[in-house]
Every structure is written in C-alpha cells, then in structure tokens.
Length: 290
Image (cartoon, rainbow, N blue to C red; front, side, top):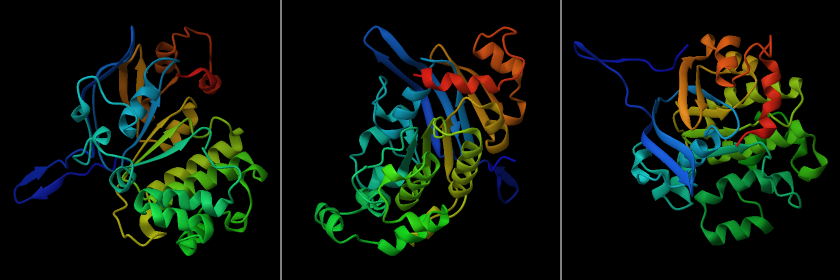
C-alpha cells in the first residue's frame, strides 16, 4: 500500500509535496553519459527499488541523491525536503537528510562495533566531540539501543572482521539509525549475502526505515521517510517495495508499482528475450552493475 495519502483541506484534497524532487537531472563523464535528463518525484513513506543492467545509471542516481555528485544542470535539479544535497557540506544538514547502506557496509575493521555504530553521529558532533568519542564513546546507551533493535546487542565490543556478513550489515543499519536521516539510500545492500540472510536483512532495513529511526537518539523525528535501493532480486522487490523504477541506457525505462514487476518486464529491461523463465537469476547481475 502506498504511503502517499491525500490531505483534506476544507472542501479540497491536496497531495503532499514530494520529499524528493529530481528535475532534468543529468550527469556526463567525459564522453560517456552516466545519466540522461531524468525526472522523478518520491514521497515520504515510499520504498523505491532501482533496477537495470550495468551502466544504466542506478549508482549515478544514488550518488546524486547522496550529494556525492553535482548534476550537470546544477545542484538544484535534485532536491530533498527542499534542499540540494550537493549544496550541503558533510555535517549535520547532509547527515540529517541522507543515510547510506552500501554493499560493502564500509565498516572500520580495527574499531569495535560500538565505534562503528557511533560513526552515524559524526555529522551531528563537533570535531572535538568526535575525537573525544574515540577514547570515551559518547552516546553509548543510544548505540546499545540501536544494536539491540537490529538483534546484535551482544556484539557491541567485537571487531567487524569477526562478524558474519549478515551481522556486518546489521551494524551498518544500526549506524544509519544513529544518523536518523529522512532518506535512506541502499546500493545493493544484500548482494553479498546468501538468500536467507538477504531476506532477513531487507526485512530489517525496511522495517526500521518505517519505524522511528530517531528513537535511539531521542530526536523524536517523524517516521515518514523514503527508501531508495538498487536491487536485482525480483522477489525481494515484490515483498518489500512499493514502487520499482527500471533504468536502461541512462534513462527511465519504466516506473511501476512493485506488484506489476513480472518476468516479461524484466526480460525486456535486461534484453534477455526468453533466456530466463524465472527472474531470480537476475540477482547474479549485481556484481556487474555500474
């Protein structure tokens, strides 16, 4: 069920403003087009899956939303809650807008799980507070609560290298919870996990995105957030997402409710013909995605 609900104002019914607005955003790398002018509107509460072959523009789109790239048409062609991510310096404003869970999880191997989770607060702290936290962890109780919510409270003093892939993903999600962003971006977040752990990890991520992420650090922010994830496993998309956007040749090929994603749609997107009777083998394309 879509989380976009009309708001009644007197005799009129108004649609809420999108949380994310992308207007003619494009990106060119030298002679290669990473993303053709693209238009999308995403509302709070939506869970949007990005699918498409290698080089279709999924990663470029996620990096534009994260503020890691500036659109060729100018930073204001991408807006989150009325602000351009590319215009914000890393810190409180950007951290409160966007949280990222990547395929590699990006954990610091020589630091305990506690410090990795607290890294989600770095954008909210001063430099002095961040340095002090390396010696005397700040907001320890909040980190403990975040780890308890993802089911690994007992791993708080472990090093990431001693954890399984599924446990490392939970640490990354707990870190994102500490950040408490409005938008969660996930770039192939379950590609390195086996099918059972992938299902668990995706269910956990979706569940936490639509709960009060600010509960752990007590900021009391609204639970109306958006999740945008690049994926290749159709069954996960159907079970956990409300909308699916297919990209091909750096353009939007389709934009559908997740329930309408079927073999024929994906075969056309990936130009598979009748090569696969079941869409699950598309999960293997993740390793080649760009």
